[in-house]
Length: 329
Image 1 (cartoon, one colour):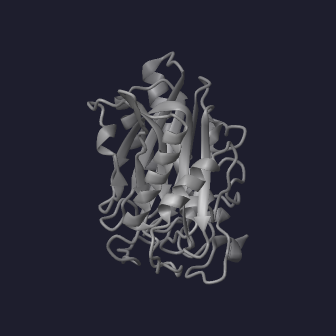
Image 2 (cartoon, one colour; image 1 turned 90 degrees about the vertical axis):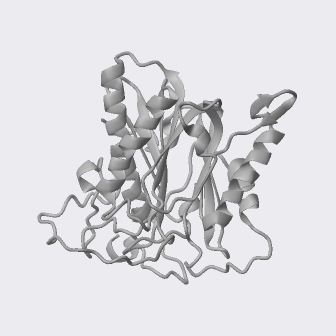
């Protein structure tokens, strides 16, 4: 496999990503927007998720497509970013048709960044406006690291961030991922610079340091965050024509990428979640092989995106954790 042109989830034709941040709040959100509605699904494996409209993503639901997906900081307050996106889409004339009304379908997920040092003493929730701003900023190119939903993210060791990656399969099908890394676990091996995701790195996309020669002794880790303070939220996407059930399988397979890149992952204290998006531009030519490879590619892209997010995070005044690049870049 090789990366797409940008090595971003927007290598999937028709998808765009927009960020918005509030530096004072030390938080932000990220929107994935399709040129037209797309099939979406979700897999939740963390023990403390925060979501909006994920129930309608089951294969037996009436609505099979969505207009956008949202990743946001702000814990439960961040779910309001979805409302800002939905109102913006409605103004564009987009949404599920019900009589003469349009109802945009905008599922979302949040991470906890309320204790990261920002000013959280608001009198009015800021996330509605951040959602609207992120929608307006949607483009094929977007920033990694301290950006969007990853702006105020933390991990078990290093400052978190927003990452993305893509690949093209031999069939010509493209797969990509975008992720906000706010995990309880660590993305690096011990206190060194090597990333757990190193075996799946392409080129030097997160430093080219390779894998460690020996893994540290097995240990029983202690949580560095409390209940509800951690979460890694992600979207994996493809241009393949998938049913909602097939997209659900892609999201489930992508969870393996989280486990490859974050140790430990899927804990009781994390709200780990993966959305899947399928634009349907390419028909499957060999359904068994194509679906097999799409699942593997989704996991690989997500692992790479997680490492890229932390690798690109920038040090800023007031940081509660060091940025990886301030020690090893």
